[in-house]
Image 1 (tube, rainbow, N blue to C red):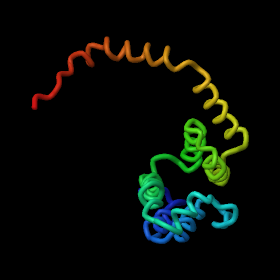
Image 2: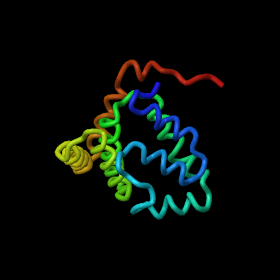
Image 3: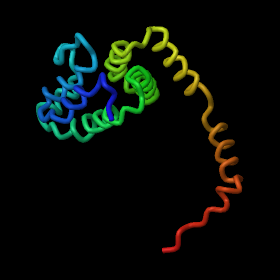
Image 4: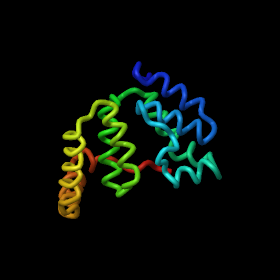
Length: 150
């Protein structure tokens, strides 16, 4: 169930059918934001040419995130800022940082997310993943799992 502050947003997202309606429902998360001002040309392309791309790859997932109500908005958007940074989706960082700030995140918290991202990707992943998988494969519980017979 969505958090009380997001009930109307979820309702609008579920009702949105056109690109402008989708963008307007997203804007409800950020007071003062006006869709279309400094929009994302990539998203505008799909809005104008094949709106089901927005539904399939953005709208449905976002509506589900809000509808489940598990993470509070500030935490959710700080997490998304970090995920967008991790995947080099630089165009997505600005809107998610704005959403985080609108949800109560401070500039210091946003910078701390960036610090965590830099900490994570600055380390050599091969060593850690090898050590981790070595422990997983050596774990008696993991070893006791047998494949399902077909």
